[in-house]
Amino acid sequence: MSIQIVPLADPHPGASSRRLVWLASDGEGAPVGSAFLRLFEREGQDHLAELELNVHPAERRKGVGSELLARAVAGAESEGRRCVLVQAGAGTPGDLFLAARGFRKVLTLTYARLALADAAVDAVADSPPAGYRLRSWDGTVPDELADTFTASRRAMDDMPMDDTDYGVVVWDVERVRAAAKAIADRGESLHTVVAVDESDGSIAGFTELVVPGDGKGDGQHYGTGVLPEHRGHGLARWMKAEAIRQARERHPALGGLLADTADGNTHMRAVNDSLGYRPTHRTFQYQLDL
Image 1 (cartoon, rainbow, N blue to C red):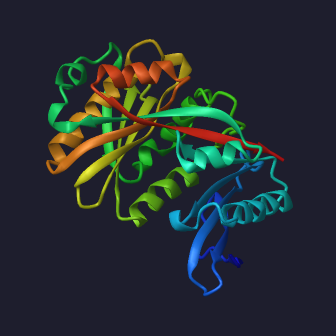
Image 2 (image 1 turned 60 degrees about the vertical axis):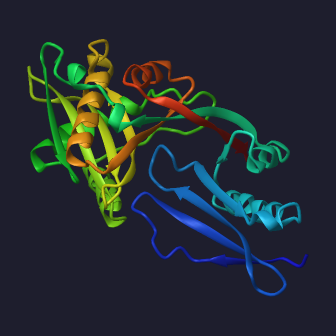
């Protein structure tokens, strides 16, 4: 099959990353595949590229994926990147494709779902650890909490990522606000619950949940983290229970909540299990070192 690969410009570069894009077409000009290479630009992750590669099922095993992959890898090398990350579902064609092309498996993620109709979290949410209180908001962090919320983001710095060369996300207030704006621009709702240290009013931990704009379907957990100096008090489970309760009460048409957790993150997986999340499937993170 004759394949034409056309590079495209990214019309919407982000505040912390940009994309290189390639579209594959057959001899008649019909699109048969695409590759999106996300280039991280901020300090701590500017060595990294993330690839999303798709080929129409009817056009697989004809060289389309290999040609798109070659373009993406060359693009990452030309941008001075150290590695390329790609995610694929366990046992899928993408899983087999990447393993055969020099990528190594560096991380396993287990996806789980909580059916909100079955969620029984009130007892947990109503049992505050001594010395802490909860606070929550929708969308962008309130101005008076912006600095301490930004500082709390370092709770994710030691999140188990197995062998992934993911680097460290360096946060500032501008980046926190830009992330919230990006979610709002997609038409979705960001809900944040934090644990506040009553001794000084600082944020000790947070959990974030994104809900579809129409309040239907399933919501998606984003980050959940507790600062090292505040661990061991059950804050993650407490915050998540409150986030679940709020989602159930405020979005009655919402069916469930989704979470994805690295298999090596045994603590967060135990939290999710205790709150009623049930595994649905697994994906693998593959990495190509350049």
